[in-house]
Image 1 (cartoon, rainbow over the protein chains, first blue to last red):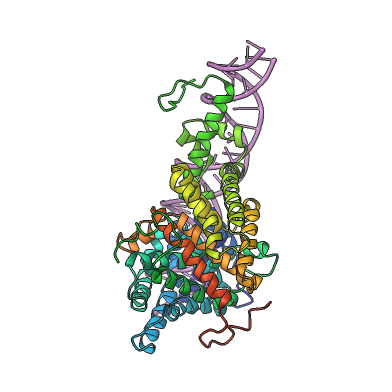
Image 2 (tube, rainbow over the protein chains, first blue to last red):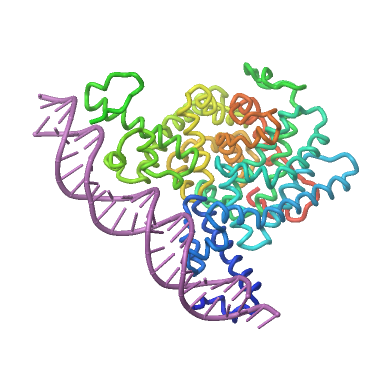
Length: 241
Length: 241
DNA sequence: ATTATCTATAGATCTATAGATAATGC
DNA sequence: ATTATCTATAGATCTATAGATAATGC
């Protein structure tokens, strides 16, 4: 057996270690490749090649590509989700019953951004991967599965912060937030080129400085307004107030 | 030659007509399939099958998949782009030198939403297709090519509407807007499930009622703020003021 | 005469599985 | 004894092209 090089380290002693290490390498490689090319732009062969193992070993561990895809998502989704749940819990206690929109959004968004800023390349690849998943037809259901609890918790706090606001406005507002957030996580480089280098899509610090405040103001405008520039139908569709 | 059924119509008389009709069917089918499965989730064979022609005819017209993909994008991108350029031009004249953020965003966003509301299924498929492209690594460059002029025009007006605002804030604000907008265009159904049916991702009217106003308030908060909830680093990174 | 469309086909790639081999585990 | 990994391979699918066929065009 031609043993592949594992970064200058001697080979793992136990089978459990070996298994864990190989699995991790596979997930890392898959995460990176999926983040670049999407679910169907990557074959198990590509991943195996990048890791330096035979394709059949991919099947041995993951059965098929869909399974691998889910494993990549599952590996990190729990961490993101529970970190944010904790942050929201903490904020709820801290705010003493009167949450603000910005406070809630900071717990939700900035907590995650910090993870991508400090968590290393793997986490940033995961973020770019999630970005694609969230705008794809097949992937969106995976977001439900993993993130509904945090999102519904956030929405609960937002309702408290915006007592006069309709459910529809809050849910739409959340959809805008998540769209902007996921887009940013993709780091496609478009903003770099568009701004001639003034903004860098890798600069999550810059995002953290701006995103929650921006979105909070949007929510408040959406929910607080009582009239808009005369525009037929603007009020017609807002039920539930 | 087993002639495929073309919706109850007799066969086209001229070759030019026949060519145009086949091309259109191919682009429609590809647009639909790409919007559902992404670039690499679709084969030329899939498209040919949906149209009812042989795969080799796809090669005859488009050479390869990348070409087809570009053709799908190009077919409609010019229309969106010029409609919005016109709307922005018109708004610039109308506002008499003092544009508002919301006015500019309405020209930019609502003009497009109207197209998707009234333009039929093909346009909505295109929108969902663009949604995926905008969050993908390979696709983002195509956005540059087709949409930079409109976007830079919008940004010019936003600068006028927000004279004290740094370029970085304006570009980041735009990135949030486009992220939210593109996400909504994907109509993944996630918001439907999340809100237990209160919101429907097909309801672009509801988006039109909310998106521009929401984003305008975000911009104003981002650019108009002079202090934020004490947060280390919040001001540090905002250059250019 | 030209061109839209189809047939046939080669080569590449991908998926998936059976079975062998070489480690680790007691 | 178990299991991590590899070899071999079959079948499916995809890409791409050459060349035939059946329309339209004058």
